[in-house]
Length: 545
Image (cartoon, rainbow, N blue to C red; front, side):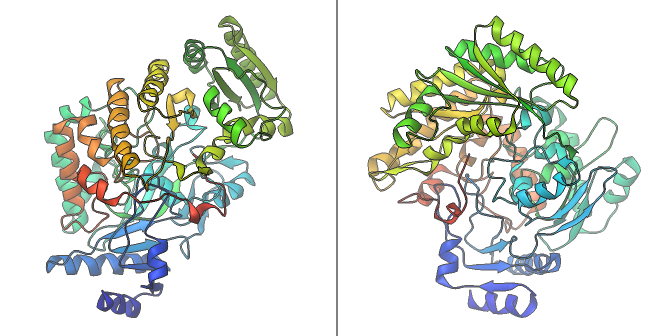
């Protein structure tokens, strides 16, 4: 590999590192998997990315495949930021805001930009990017695009794919393309290109044309989905065509995103928060379904259960002192409204209050920002679980991203509790109640053979539960390596075969993040499981999910 490193050092502006400590640092992300790369490249510009891709393509043509994995801050929970070949680390240099159009609200950024930095800049223009993830303070926008990330605001505003309007992408052979929605005439020109880009458009158009029924049948009943490739979003009935939705959520397996143009929304800092307590799961589900029917939906509907609050009380007894009263409610929900205009906001809060009163929930309305921050500690207390270690036990992100249709919210919770009861493990649940998208991380010790075996039994049971309820294995984190073996189970053999063909169209030599999303066996995943889990490279921040 030294010859490869020497070649890249000579031809790139950015740095190339092969030291053992650098490779060890990049051998883990936020997932339970580990894989050590051969070398690390810190590209200074798009041309560095292009040259790296072109070089690996030429090697692959001669039979030597060196994978490329694009990486942001390493917050990926599915193992998609790991690779055995070249890691392209974007945050070091490619972290700029390139353009902001104050009229349209569209902002163009480089892939390595810190999400919080972008959000702070947008706030100064009274704008914001709504689908920010819980890791907003330390993750990158490129990572959010790669995973089709979302978060607490998604219930009202949608996910990253809904806000991505155009991308600059380096293809597997080093060609650089600009994606956006093309009309019929523009698309026709693309079909005529004598380039790799033209080949991709022709092959993808034929694939969609020949399999439209299968693609249409793959549309699910969940409110957001980060599993698979978004083939349903590429071609519209008006004949327009756009590769952008396909790259969003592709986790670097189809191309390497260097720039993203994103739409933004008006930012309303003055919000109203309702802290609601529910004595039963039935009450909580009834509230979610009715609140979703409001003409101006809540901007957030986040929840924690009584088991999480009990764990937090044991591990950090003063964290929620004077914030949550005992006995803890079965479900505590934070319902936020950011409606534009004080009058309209009060109207929506009143409607929500009537719903809560009708179903018998207790609630408190808070409009003071400092007091709202205090109550948001309820939801953010999940960080205590994520960061806690005790007698070798660690909360593991192995069954933490399933989403089901909102009307199956109660069944989902009941099923989760049943899984944990059978496994004799303590369960604590939190997440995005408004989307029936829940997070749960069991305490296990990966140094113990029994617990390592339990990881995969839990994953199997959990996946079966989610899919039996008409859900998706990934709502916002992507299937990556960890969940990839279950993708065929979710979509069925015909649709999964189309995903495999899409991968082959864009990446014929398998150089772009192989072993992610498609063509992944469970034996491969088992071989990558860490012997101990930690979030060392994220503790400078506050790991959240």
